Length: 81
Image 1 (cartoon, rainbow, N blue to C red):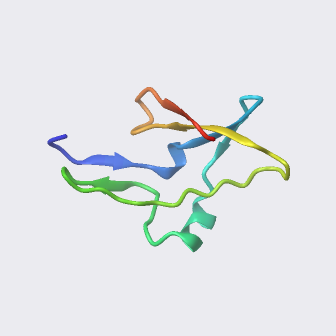
Image 2: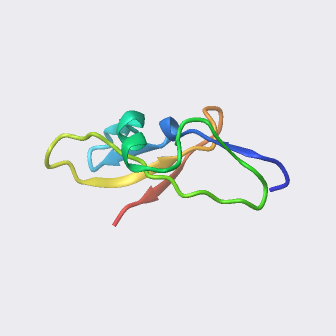
């Protein structure tokens, strides 16, 4: 686009086969990612790589992730294989 876009890791939800949503664990992500995933501004033409961390019960098999660019936007559901 032609304007900066915000990224908020807390808006990115992991889904399991039952449709249960899990939130990104910002504290855990801070320990493994060089980039802060909370309220990150991305300028036009730039890109960033982030690591999202989810604390899920043992045996949980993630099936999709819901990605949002803001709390007011519709989400995009991406299947995980």
